[in-house]
Length: 428
Image (cartoon, rainbow, N blue to C red; front, side):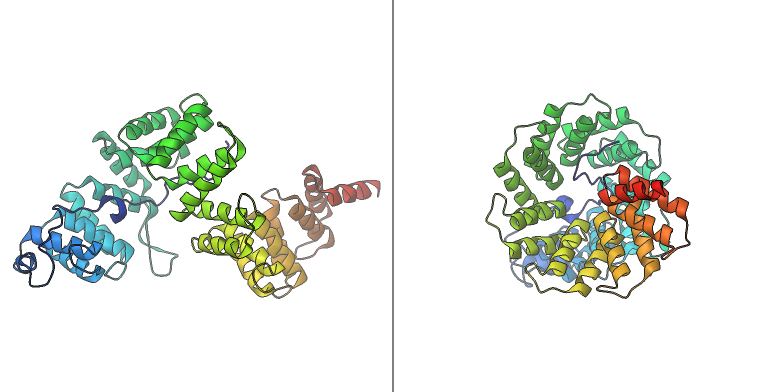
């Protein structure tokens, strides 16, 4: 099953303060100092004033400087008084470490209180938490174990009440068969309902459905239509996907200028793959004047989000001395980080560097491991190098049969050196 480039799915996405911050009242111009009437009312326990004050500190509005600590303080006051909105916002503070020490379990506790108070947004976030679990400090165990069944139960309940983010997320589970049987038809139905309610992520995923024919016929015209609709609503994944279509003339007329414009807009909004594409354009001098320093800056921004393509490109720049001094040790570190995140070219490079002892110590066993990782992802050069490891017994137990098998795969995948070696070994 082929997925379109730049499809990332919904894993781990909570509803956040950026989109669903709950202010029960509008900001008041009276809130300009600690001696204001609203401040005094909040101190005296007025719930509405406590929420106003908390929101003002959180957003830095109504004469108050942004102060997450004070925002969390006043949300807590209102939460103790039973405000579901304050409980939700305090949970978000704990979830992201805003004004309080980050604490997943405290976030979960306040989401639960808010959900019990009737906020579907809180119930949704609980579903997401059950889907991912809460890791302990070591990052290896769980404070709260994953429970996909519970997550899906909550999502189903929210779907029954037409809560669009839940419909979109449940559809994602149905498409991937995560915790349930795949059901493209049901997924398409849920996404259609959610999109009609204005959910941009649902629109983006409907484009995916029309691209792959999931629950509908393949239709590139409708795919482009939904990508445009989602892009207009600010969905950065849709912007990148639409940019890709314009770049390659897929489902629409090729328009490289518009493609770069959309990649740039998506990158400015924080999309890591778009950052890589913008970096590529500056590196190659496509549509813009070549600027390797600017290319490196965009790769670095994407690398901050652990994008494995960006990490690989930065490794190449460090190895070749592009926009920076040559540094084999730094290159190795970047390639290794990228390789661990699944980048097949980085895996091959790490194998080569371990084999040659360049940028790191020489280690034939480690080289064998990384060649094998890349070979299993069908990289022909890695398949050839892995074959030679088996044939020569380098970093592994010697096995001519295993070596010849991998060499044949490399040849089938177009590696000319492997093709020549297979021919020579056949003759022998």
